[in-house]
Image 1 (tube, rainbow, N blue to C red):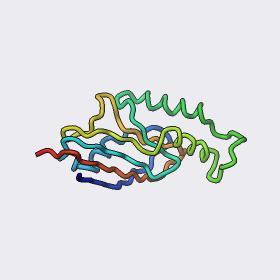
Image 2: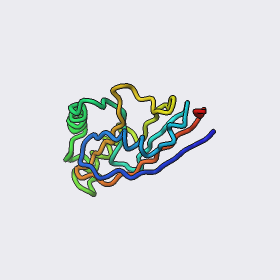
Image 3: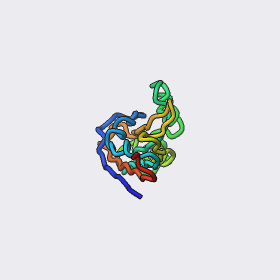
Image 4: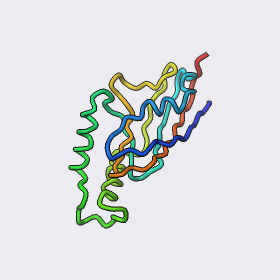
Length: 144
């Protein structure tokens, strides 16, 4: 088995759901050598997350933001952890709900995403930070 791995830094983004599919693909060009395999993308942060969803209509990303802000509101007086402001604990909760990694099959030199699927960076802080992700690809069979 062969493994490729790359760590990349994502630029700062404001709070919201941002497509990073192209950045992920560009960071691991070895994917084109893989006939079958698996790719995992992992974010090394606790106030941002990753998910896969709609890649065409930007209103989907706006609706995600609206939903999560309603589901996990800022300023709840029951929160104990607010060291970095009112968005601190809600950011951690949102990240826990969505998760820190996604896995995508690799087929015939491409990530096997569906037609309308993209990889989201879910930034849960009002003023996002530079985020680090680790992309790992496991090769089952190489393209000859």
